Image (cartoon, rainbow, N blue to C red; front, side):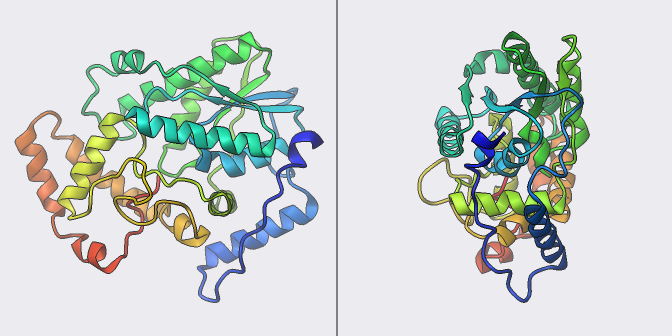
Amino acid sequence: MPTQSSKLSYSEGGQLPSDAPSWAVAASERIREKMAKGLGTTAVPPEGVKRVLLHSCCAPCSGAMVEEMCASKVDEVVVFFYNPNIHPKKEYDIRKEENKRYCEKIGVTFIDCDYDSDNWYERMKGMEFDPERGRRCTECFDMRMERTALYAVENGFDAIATTNATSRWKDEKQVNGSGFRAAARYEGLKYWAYDWQTDEMTLRKYEISANERFYKQEYCGCSYSLRDSNDWRKANGIPKIQIGGESAGLGERYFTDPLVDAAEESQDVVDEFFAQANEIAEAGRDVKERKKRLSVYKDRRKNEAHDGINNGLNNW
């Protein structure tokens, strides 16, 4: 697909520093080898797939995945933005417009779908205090992938996929499960599953994000994620999340350094966050119990906040 892939001309980022972690050095080398051979040699689409509708949650998660797909043996990749979970509307508009701008720059068609947040809240009833990666997240993925699959069938696409699968903040099996279920609703429609979370894909994602100076979002997206993330930050003595503007609640507002940004999504950081989040979620609607559990983390990261060591706290 030369008309799209020819526009994907990013630099490979700056020279890695001498103290770069071994995983980054190895990932960078694999990226260089892949580029020398030509992109698209790793991610192989399902058999017979020529047109792919890619559900996109945000621009940062789209970069490396769109690049890889556009260079694969498919005829067309179209980005589909359907994310009624994102709250507030100001945050939604920031993420949507950035994604749209990125697609226009690289010559990929962008479909702006409805912001039917009322339907999203209706579907999430009874799960307001579920933990991240719990039932609510499954329902959220299902809702977005079902809409993606419907549009794909109505418009002649062979397969669907989602950029949610690129983030280590997401449960890959949970995301893929929603994709497979949605595709199975329609005869002939396929879901493109692949390991989009490798070290080289993660590093490449952050190289592109830094080159594009993408907006660095500080939470998953929904109002419940915003609530729980701010509760967790407060318990840890960390400034609350800021929506838009030139300053983030914590750390940098925009992606600038691939190594630092990738470190914020290291598996250790992600595992620690979800272990704590699950403990808090067990308290459910009991405000006193939630405060009690949150108090366990008081002072744990205060020194890091003062010293500027903020890994893993503001990069979703």
